[in-house]
Figure 1 (cartoon, rainbow, N blue to C red):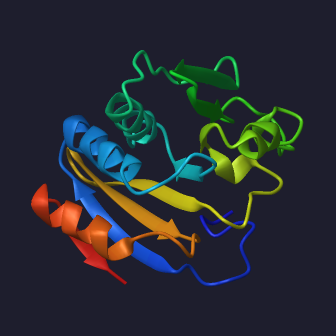
Figure 2 (spheres, rainbow, N blue to C red; figure 1 turned 90 degrees about the vertical axis):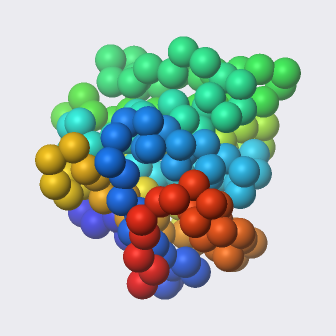
Length: 174
């Protein structure tokens, strides 16, 4: 399945960002945290070792949430600080397509008290239409391409681009 799974409309914003290290991938996740609100769903796609968990870790670190680990063996980890939560789901070990309502992702989204990240989102039967997709691929040795597709009408894409420039990321808009 593609990173556009569950969305029949065009993304309102699309960009490919290059990351040359796990630190830069975490920095990108941290940058995103400044442009989303609790209740945002982020679907993560990509093979092993492409930086999905590093991205989530950077997002969490920017919110003061620490200890982020891949929830591959538990399907979900929840991190909380001062009433703000990060719900981190991982469908890697799922043998069949997963109903995300059964694992609590829809409840987490409906609470609106945090951010919902789902690794291996291509294994979900359905994804919320209003979300951000982040597709991670190996570009070159030690370099990752991260394609961000935004299906949130309220997202400040221009502000995000300014943040990328400020942090010296290489990127391509399409």
